[in-house]
Image 1 (cartoon, rainbow, N blue to C red):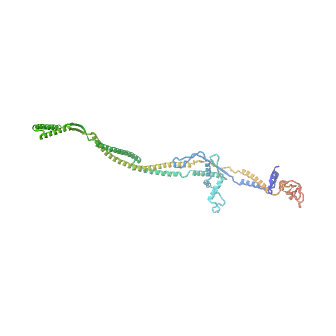
Image 2 (image 1 turned 180 degrees about the horizontal axis):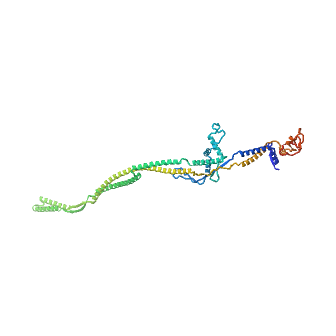
Image 3 (image 1 turned 120 degrees about the vertical axis):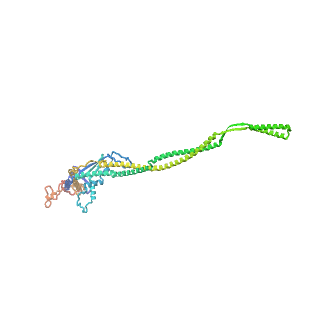
Length: 542
């Protein structure tokens, strides 16, 4: 026989407890045991009969990467982030989106879950709930019955809803799925993109038309000539005339220097050159002087014939002869010189070149003045054309910017139109992979409920009996007495409950057929039978 250790609640000390003693506990506490067992069984049967069947509708959402929307940016070619795998964060985000208050409220109001019948649900009833509070309570109740969880190692999300009405459960999931898809569209793509891009496209188209009209007016004012082209031509001409002016000034400086050199040479160059020199005596003078000398000598001779050499007339003749001879000698020592001259060609060339240089210098001065006036004119025109070119460039930049913006927003409008078309056809990155069907098999089986109730009834009944036995402080067996008082038990007299009722005499001293005396104490030592309560005799010390 198996022995167990039982602890007394009064002393806290343990004593051995056998299987017989455990069965005795059951017989002693059979009223509590049966009461709990019957109560739990009746409650289980009532629950099986009264509790409604629960139906669970299921649906699955597939999260995928088939559609990639361009990023809304100011660039013409918007960056596109392409990823094939679906991350856990994205799945959890979709789960939170399904369980959001907006989606649940839409499902509650559409399916009428907020219009359940309530006791005293009258408008004038002071404890009647407001519509918002009824919706809030219905949302809270729906959140308790709704299960949304990602399926492991997949890109799918499982949605389950439990209700006592299978058709209502399927309808709730259908409405919830549609509300979730609409919510997904709303959060994944901002509304009003197409209208915004259409407005911006029209605005920049109008600005482009205005800029082109201004360019046309500007071109008409300039005679159809582009200021930039005219400015380039003018600058080219300006450079040519500036170079020509510098050349003229250089020529003027050279001519001026040449004039100075020619003047210097003209001053140092004779106008005429000696071509021939011929020396000869003056024959007429010499002949006359010789004739005079001969006449004087003849006269002297005549006078000497008449007079003495010292005569005054002779002396005068001698003196005249000497003078004549001196004159002849002087005349012979100074012959006549005949010199022939001609015009100097160098001087003539210098004079001609000087006159030509002076003439060229005057012409260069006139050309320099005219060229300088032309250069100033081209400079003025170039400045004006530069200003006109800046205005035209500003107009061109404005037109170009408006054109680029117009083309950009036109492209963005087509992208938004395409996205709207995809949204209308429900081509999304999420799809309802499993349509919710009306469940026909309840999830709470009555047989399973009965089995659980039976196990619970047995467990609770045994627990109640053992607890009651444990809390009882009276002695029931000799082992308890021996363990509690730590003294030996000499005898144990079982107590028969039927003895006092059927076999007692009037004085209570008669003996019954079982060997019991009138006071209900057994004379034989032994243990009580199961179900009998007993009195234990006082222990006798050694």
